[in-house]
Length: 452
Image 1 (tube, rainbow, N blue to C red):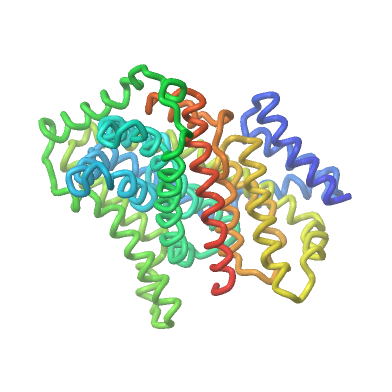
Image 2 (tube, rainbow, N blue to C red):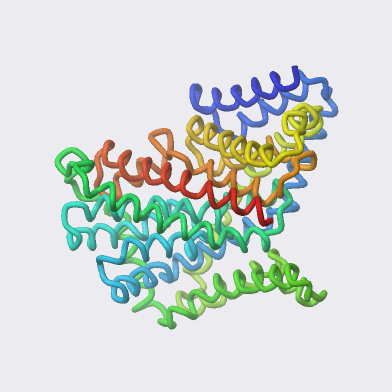
């Protein structure tokens, strides 16, 4: 009955979100309350589990999410990402730009939100697409979709990556070691696959391209940033502007390798702690923003970051609440019994199950982050009973969570408009590209399970 109640709770959350358009925070709390009361945890125990789960996940990732959001907001307003994209156009040329852009989005840009990423990258894609002929626009669109979401789920400090790692109690340094490889490789391979697909009659410009000008807000924002950088502030070298991202990543990676090769010291552990590393990045971004834009623009960027942080922290914490309620039931033992064999098959089955749960949630909910957080909350209580590395389970959840982003996602419609695609064109690029990326990344996750 516990498994049944858990399934009902998940369906209840999904139904409230999809059918009745209830906010995910409310839906997940309602599902948590139902599960706790129906499974015998009791009224007091249910409330305690919800509060405890929220607090525990905030202790794990609260500062990380807040610092990461603020860093991204400051650097975006300073024009760092726009300049980085422009440099790539000059450096690699239009023909290689889809691969370079996809790799860039999956490694450097996960520090900012996916909607900001597509706003920044879509003008470049639109302007460079004609140089690649009739398949230029869909190829760039596919590269953007694959790169943005491969980084979002696999690469620190992508929100989904941080959330999954926190819920499963996986070291961010260890996650970074694997994610920084899987993310860009997935993005580039997906772009290559889409290029092959587009050589067929798959794409029909008359039907798949909107033909209208994309939203003017992206170009207006780009011009506003350009004006700030050239007239209102000091123009610093691009590598300096990117230091608030590069330095934290280097610190976290060094701490992770020190642990792996057993030469870590208290000082190295302190410097490599993700909270400290991202705080260093935030201080650097703040100082650079003050220097390039002045205190007024810096204050505005910080306020926007604070506004966005609250919403994300709440949904992340509530995802932890659902996991805590599941942990208060006996579901861990029920599910652990399914994987009690001694062969290698249960490891594969566990990873496939984690992938499937995340993919199914994403198809139903339409949010990569909510699907990832919910799947991690469901699976976290049984990790201790499974003979598989938590980082591999987390990566499997990440892989499944980006499967088939489609019409029930707000990002889908923003992507469609900014790139000048029809609905069918967005389905043929964004939906197919994220599906391909999800499938391509899964074998790499299985390899991680063998070596982790």
